[in-house]
Image (cartoon, rainbow over all chains, first blue to last red; front, side, top):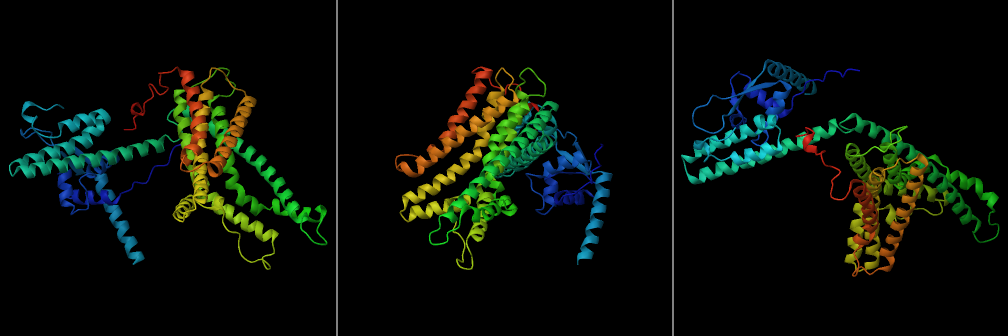
Length: 101
Length: 385
């Protein structure tokens, strides 16, 4: 019997990342940590981003070589799926909050 | 990716090389490289400020790398275990199915037999107690037999006793299940092992954890309730109010440890030692699942196919040998030996160690000394990283 499609889920950290990437511009991991006001940790942000990329919520690319040497940074951007899911989740959360208030 | 000459002074290349050895290329690309890139950028920016800022950037980068890799490995290993709980290959899954059915079948049969024996002994004890009451008009066997049978076969009482019975029968049932699981139905040639060895280890570990929970907390609590049930059934609580006090077997593992410490502090060495022996005895019996698993793997690895009758006979022999030896060393450790000249731990666990060594020797004998049965089956080759 084929498995039923799993309901997409968003953890708290994933919500924060999508919120920061919502306006469409690209950010790298350390930039996300700085902008999150301590809601994201430097040691876990890339693990979360990797999982989100596997789930199709964000996409990434390496930045162009600036000729400074060293490894290029990886820049992340929210996908349409990620943005839709964020909107849906925000709406659900707002409704639940109203009902329980 | 290898550093160019201009990049060599940047930190992080060694970390990256290390990660390449233990992580998949995808993990290196999406997890390790971004962290090393951040470290190198921060370090370069800090270089323009001060040596202290540079050192701080390096330490923060290394710490982030360690945390990220640990977090990733824990998540990846957990996911791998969850996906492959019943085996990564069809062979492993078939083994788990046969071993599971064999273990549960043996558990049901042996628990029923032990329960039946227990009921007979309980009837005997109650009849003996009542027929030996002093005074005129002491009841006869015929008078008390119906009441004794009702107490011994009471469903509530039997349910309360079930965890204690399972503790006694689970490790031998596991041995039977493993021997049964390794032998495919109708097969006339021995089939082993590396594919099954991981399965044997997994199932033994799972049973051990279950045993620790049962023997440490569940069985003592329900055992005490059973004693209260017996007390209320036999003695008139209106005349003798109160409850029977807990004995060592009705104390949880944590209570046993605390009681042993308290007795030792009060200078009662003998009493303290008996609590410690009980503590070790329970854990040793829980670890019997691993010991029996090892013996099962060792017997399975022999160049012959065991029949069901032989499997049952070997299981029974191993159980009797193990239980008698454990009871004997527990008695000796608690009563006869001086705590100053012997380690309670070593004495009580000596049976597990000795029988475990027999299992390991059987396994090594089958594979030839110096050749690992795990060769070519490293978890690192199975995509869990």
